[in-house]
Amino acid sequence: MLLKESAVLVMATVCAVAAGGGVMALGARSLAHADAQIPTAGEGRVAKAADGHFWARADVDGADVRFLVDTGASVVMLTPADAERLGVDPKELRYTRPVATAAGDQRGAAVMLDHVAIAGARVDHVEAMVIPKGLPASLLGMSYLGRLSSFKATPQSLVLDR
Image (cartoon, rainbow, N blue to C red; front, side, top):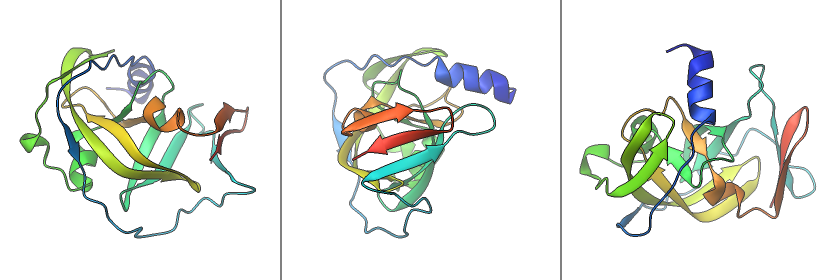
């Protein structure tokens, strides 16, 4: 799939997460590294990429995960590869939650992330879903963004207020 098609697929993702189903809590890990982006005055910034999207590097439970920022995603969405990097075996998860994506309807597995920190903007206990197929990148959705004091997109960056 071409990068442009992948970006369109991901940005078009609309997540409808139904109630019910179990949530697997990911084990808490200590912060393994400091975020490379320096926050200023209680805010973090994510520079706009050359492709026009906001790609954020996050500390997720001590692991580095690259996300495409997607305000149309109800929750943080993880690819199976990123879930594995967080210590979760995607084959052991129960995919019981209905999810509507641009790739079609499917079922996701609910997980709880201990923390997600981007450029100093940390949110604890973030709901996420592991999507078994169709996501070319993990998505930073509203279960993280909606818990910030505010966030705004400027022509140069995404500003995250804790």
